[in-house]
Amino acid sequence: MSVKTEGIVMKNLLCVIAVVAATNVVNADEYRLHPAPAVYGPTLAIQSQLPPAPKGAVHVAKPAAVELFQCVEYDDLDNIHPCAVPRIVQMPDPCACCDPCSCCKPKCVNVRICVPPCGCPKVRVTRKGNKVKYDYGKYEVELTVKKGYIEVDYDD
Image (tube, rainbow, N blue to C red; front, side):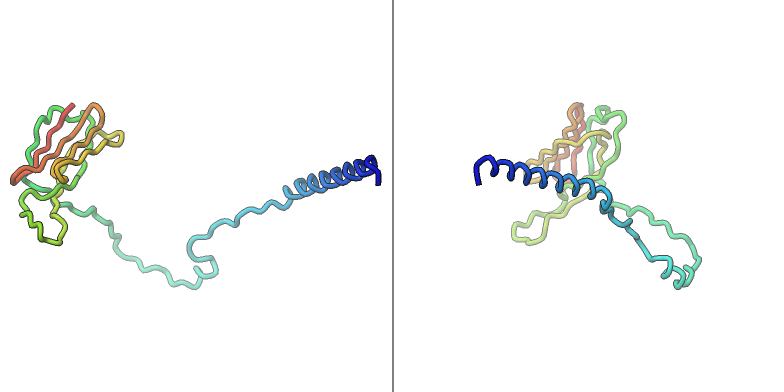
């Protein structure tokens, strides 16, 4: 075979490959696969076999009550954000005894603070968790465990 006929054969072969590829792309649109809709729960055939649900009282779940620590001293309440929302945070219990030989985790207490409604704070923890600062930019809340109580200081 000469170089000229080899070039013509290669050209024809490439044209055939291009036509076959284009045909497959066009046909692929006709047979596009779509996922079947998800069915959650029993089907109609099974529902007809189920007995009706008993009628009774409607039970509404109540939010669980959280016991708040009572010995909390709040400072600079005039620096709280005007649209602040209450949040409950945990701090180490200032009344718990420190036993270095204890294998238990330190006891924690729940403290209610008011924080700005927007954004995520920068949280800084120092003194082995006994001092926590929630920084919201212009506003910040600083919690400090003191001897027998927790101090919450609001800054703007």
